[in-house]
Length: 599
Image (tube, rainbow, N blue to C red; front, side):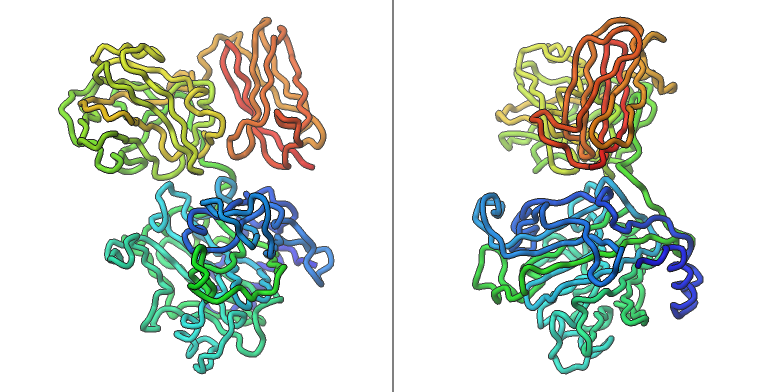
């Protein structure tokens, strides 16, 4: 039976050795895995086996909530790895795979910045080829390793790696440990000093320690670590990071010294989200890698194999600790991307909140003068046969409230150039609208002078775009090889709100969205709204990732209206349990609500 978290916190403070224990504070968040509401299931095999040559296909069916063996009434996250093949179980090129497993992440659901993070985990027999891990990636839109990576624990390391460190932390120096007897941790970040021919990404890994100074994996030579629970902890503030394993009531450091965060590793001063998975094969193990059966040993891990995560908890540590539930804070009203004079509720600071990128050197500086203010994006083509550029947010940008609004911008570009404007979300979805040459579209008059376009967000978001998690909030793209010089200015998102008031621009007679009832709901709920007069309405229902699930439209009557939703999508299939958003759009404005479906 699981002990109450408060009692566990007290026991931990009283029993763990060292003066550092007094610095563990209050419980900020916990997931005891009674549901998976805080986690997103990952599917597929990624790019080249998630970049590691992993051999599995992550499948939703391999992730569930289950009873913990031998612990009556206690539930945990269960991930099962299987020897399985069949339709859809393929790599990125469509080649068949022979294994499936599970992976979950809290991205867009829960993020953590500082604190003491604790997890109780049980891994299966890994012999050989199992690669279980509980880890974190930065919420930033930057790619790995600039996102930063924190591996609270990982097992399944190659024999060479195990032998390198086995004179410390329980090892016997005989080079005879198995994958079930060693567990370790790691920190990875981008460092310019780490860039070389063999490491073009610039990934600085603390576990890369050939001199055996910093890395201290833990060895349990007498009792293997599989098929029993072990506790892992990360102690993290704005200055240092320390990772430990607690086995048999004894806590051991997984590094000789706590890692000191410097300007080179400031990735670790930003929020991170959690990941749990059980990989099969790949570059970390002695087994072969995707697409190259001769690169290592065959998989010998007994399958099916089951991994359990009993809980994850976050405590205040050394006065630090932040947990955010859900996506980033939503923006409202007018949100400026690149404007000097347009009144906005808020706007980015280029170089701090966002950066401007030209793709593959397709543009160079131009001479176009600003439309307004003193700043302008002035470019000319660089003979590459296409061009692309955009404004990328350092952290995902939540513009969900702008679903009924517009993306507005000024552009001065020759009339004979066809170009596209688009957006890209954190999941890699992208969508564009085209501005044909010599054609007026979205209000943009093509006369070669400064003109303004106002793109309805409903057009530019497409069907799959997650407006809660935008990475690029503005992109310009040309694919026909036109040579030109052009300027962009006064770029902002407009939700139809008055800047400074955060109130709808509609009259006092605007439609009013009311709370749905019941909420949470199981079988069905009613979406309710009030209208001042008979008028057309549209209600879109979105899942937590921003994908449109259901659309209702019709003629609303003056007074209170109700629209029932039976928890099914447009194809009649039952929607999964979780958080959903619904948005009412009428001639009088737009408004959004949130509901929870429980099956």
